[in-house]
Image 1 (cartoon, rainbow, N blue to C red):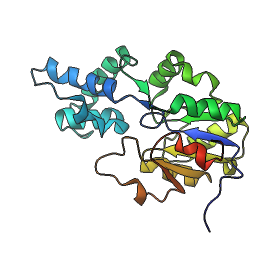
Image 2 (cartoon, rainbow, N blue to C red):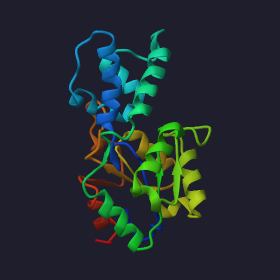
Image 3 (cartoon, helix red, strand yellow):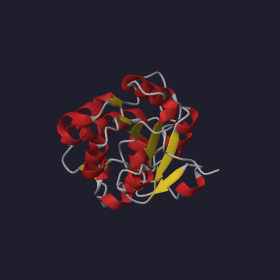
Image 4 (tube, rainbow, N blue to C red):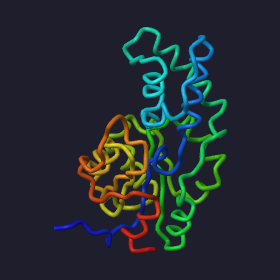
Length: 224
């Protein structure tokens, strides 16, 4: 039996790679570390596919460094400082996202954000991008004791919006988004236009739906 969205009363989104393209600023923050150490600059496209993994992904691309490396914590903090300083310089909304949000609001469908990004950075983006003025909830990676793929942040967002989790649909560009959404009892949508990770195939994630562009979500919700 195919899933249906007829009972959906709220829409939750991942942030990076789903609503906004933050790869240019994340990559630039990591590249600043390379240049400061006399290494050649890498093109932003070299970083893009790992942007969803945050500092871990950016340092892996920039230095082939994993969290187990003894210098990782110090380099990560330097990366964080670089990123915070330029967090909104080159970050933009994906094509169709403003229209998508407008349509949700017009159809009285509450929407919100559940991201693994720390509040330190999420709050700055939310404050500086008018897109988020109508968001009913913004839950960051450190809002609850757990981050995705644990369902806790998704359940927290549903609670803040006053919506039963089973009446929510969650959209994300990483397998952890689908795992977390399903664990929370929500319908899930794989955003195949996002970062996806290293060689990931969103069709293998077991999402209820898959979209190739943000506005395709409206067709699923019968609000286009």
